[in-house]
Image (cartoon, rainbow, N blue to C red; front, side, top):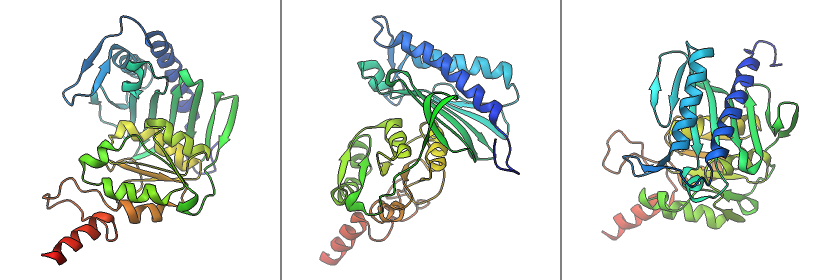
Length: 295
């Protein structure tokens, strides 16, 4: 039960598990299928018939049992208007899925009044599932009845920290590779576990920092509440709490400010007057000041 005075989302969390069960049935049946159909979306990222089938199944169930709720999904966008919004990524890690790599998951979150209040992350090929609800902690296991509580690490120095990410390409494309590599060099260890898995390992205390330069709400919503309920912190790269900033830095909390001094803020573009300035002290900031001095 939630703490006194907090809304009870128990029924919604049970529903999210049911939705995840249905999604797992679809994804496992299509994983490595010889007739799997893969297309390229306008942004040149892949989408499979499994992605589309999972999102359609979830939407169909929600339209029946939560007809007043809005839905945002990766494949079909946003529908409905409500203070309650389900955010769905039918397969996070589609590139892994279509190549036969077993690291992918369905992400299901409920956002109420612009706060993620619960989520389920289900990775059937890893035989793992993670979930959380506000005030009830973060958990992992096979079911609600067989679960272990997730707790972030107590690592307090970057030199002792394990850093996870998806790839270096995004940082390079956004002109932030030097900043990220500088953070990486300070950390004890770095591995590209990628996608949802980085953040679930962080919630379990196996990883201490995760960061990505560009993500959508459907990529982050389910991860946010699990990290927070495990005792960690989830923000944008300019330090704003929550999954709404278009990029992500997650940590055990102790390392967050130190990581922000390296990554700073991430503007939309160098010539965008509405973009926040890069944070003082980032490698980009030092290089730009050096360039002005040489002029």
